Length: 460
Image (cartoon, rainbow, N blue to C red):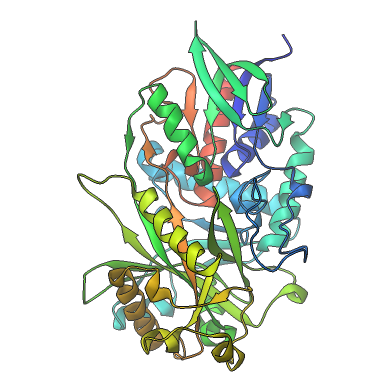
C-alpha cells in the first residue's frame, strides 16, 4: 500500500530532522514519512527579511517557526551541550548517555559544517567568580555557535543526505490520529490518509496545543509546565564584549530581592539582530546572529525571562503567556519597543524619543510603554535584573538600552514517556520540545538520535 509506512514523524524540527539523519546513516530498512505544516528549507523566507514589509503580517504558517529544521533553523544555530538547562533528557536516559547523545550531535554538526566553529565553555571562566560576587549565578555549559547562516547550510546538507531515504511532505499538517488493530491512521490537512506502525509526535513548541489534543484522545498523562515571560534586551555590543568573547552564551540566573523570583538571561546574540516570530497567530520577539562578519550588526541582544509556574486551580501556563502577548499585539500591532530610561521614569517611548536614541534598533517595532503590558511583578523583576547585570557589564542599565516586548517562551506540558520516549500507547512516541522533555536544540536533536537507534534495533 502506497499510504502505509513503518514510521511517520509528525514535525520536521530538530528532533525529527536528526531522527531522519540517524535512520539514514544506520541504513534502517523501514519506510518513513515526515510531515510538516511549514515549507521546505529553501522556502523559509520571512516577508520582513525579504523587505516586503516592516512588521509581522501573521502569515498562516510562520517561516520563522515552521518548516524543515523547525524554529531552531533560523534561530542563531546555538547548541548548548549541558544537562544544567535546556531540558530534562538526562532524567530519562541518564546524565552520561544524555551528554554522549549531545556530543554526537555536535560531532555531526562539525562534520557537516566542514569548518569547525569555536566551542566555548563556561567551566573555567573568570566570569563565574565575577557573577558570584554580584549575586548572579553562571550555569556551566559548552556552547557551539554556528550562526543562523551556517546552521541553515548544515540543515540543507542533512536534507540532501536523507531525501532519497525519507519521504517528506510540507505544507501538510497532521489533523487526526487514531489507532485500530495495532495500526495508526493519520489524516492530514490536505485530506490525505496514511497508515503506520510507529507514530512520532515531534511538533515542537508551536505544536503544543495539537500535542495536547492527541494526548487527551489517547488518555496519556501530561504534567503542566512553566511559561517564561520577559523582554528582549538590545544594547551596543561593546558593553557585553568582555563576556561574549570569552563564553559567547552566558546563562546567568538571578534571584530577585523583592519577590525571590528567578530571572535569567537567555539566547544571547553578539552582533546579532532582533526578530519577530508568529506562534499560532501571536507575535512575539526573539533574536539571532550570523557567522558571516558581513552580516553582523553593532548590537548584542539577549532575553531576560521570568519563570512562572502555577498551582491549583489554574494550570494553563501557556494561555497565561499568550494573553500577555496578545495585549502587546493589541497595543503595538505586534512588538512593542521601549528605552530602559523611559521605563524607569514611567513614561512611554515615543517616535521623538526614539529619534534621539543612541542605540539603533535592529527590528522595526512600535515605540510604547511595556508597563501597560507586562504585569508589575515580572516588570519589577526585569528592572532589578538589569541593575544586577550592570554590575558585571557596566552600561547595561543605560537610558538607551532597548527593551522589546514581549518575549514568551512556551513550554508544552510534559508528556509521560519512558526511557525510549514511548508513551503508554505502544508505538506512539513523543520527541523534542513538543514533548516538554527538551527545551533546546542540542537536547531535541539528541532525542531524535536516541529514537532512531531504537527504531534501528526494531527494524534490523
